Image (cartoon, rainbow, N blue to C red; front, top):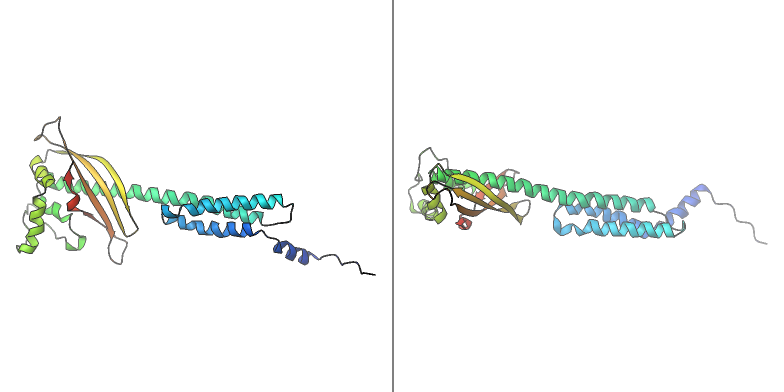
Length: 238
């Protein structure tokens, strides 16, 4: 005659319960943690969405299992992580783009102001990498280095049609930002398209000149210091 089974201890019940944790719940937590990758950029925004779907499926399966499966709170944790990082990723990306666009607008406006104030050499420095720029004295219009290699890029800059028109526009000109569009990049390099309108007495109050250019942002080698540069090949009149 078989002996009656002894009642399960509290520890035994915990072990059995632990063994019944839903695999979906574990996957939900895993993908919830992986959702942090959404902060890197839009290409990984699908991970929080996937984590949210897995978490909801896990919670539904656990609820419908009539206590045969556990891990509902794990699935809930996965869902919360997915929601948090799913929101944090776009917020970081959009706020970063906004700040880059604002800085690019300020940088290009300074560049344009130097041109209408007839300081082409100082404006030319904005088109060079930061390491190659030199300090320009007030009123200086020619580079100190008179060699052909040093003067050629500056001469080519002066031949650009927008440069010629802005130098002729005069200091009474008004610079109006029209639009700033983040083009793309990464944490090391970004490009922003900036469009500005120039109103000048030289061309009449009812007319204006619209110019556009790309501003490139890079980080100084080995640091987090931003460096901006106008790409001269993109500087043109619309």
